[in-house]
Length: 177
Image (cartoon, rainbow, N blue to C red; front, side, top):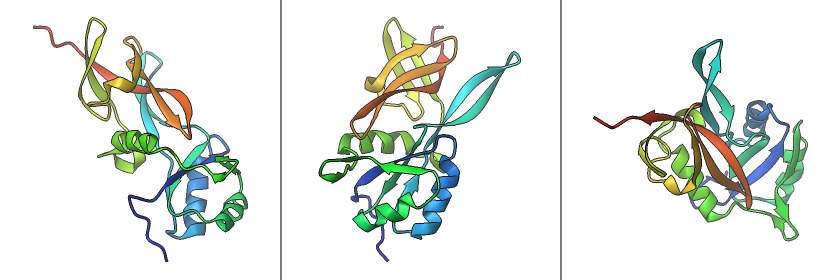
């Protein structure tokens, strides 16, 4: 059996939204370690009945990412799994994620448990944003805006060349004495 390595390309499957976890389990069972499947999630703070709660939501709703040396015959095996729609591809065949996309995703998921992105601590001074710690540390360049009231940062992420704006939860720190 082929062992997945860090150098193997990443791909994206488009699947039925809100069924990512079930589909991921079915894919893992079907391919028995041939590919490494990811259904990354993010922690989002939401207000419910005047209380703030943390909710786990998909990072890319309707997508499952996977890594490994892709073989064309496997596409039909993937498509036979319920609620798998299609593989992101170009005219030339399966479209691997760009190296830059994989680097950003790997950094966000680094030191994260169970493929979910936690909450980062931010400090804002004027228009400048400084990430003190958390998954967004040293990634200020992908932050588009910060919603102080909701405690969220809007970040620009890309999958297969398709840019998406995603909300990630942040704690805003007040570092003034």
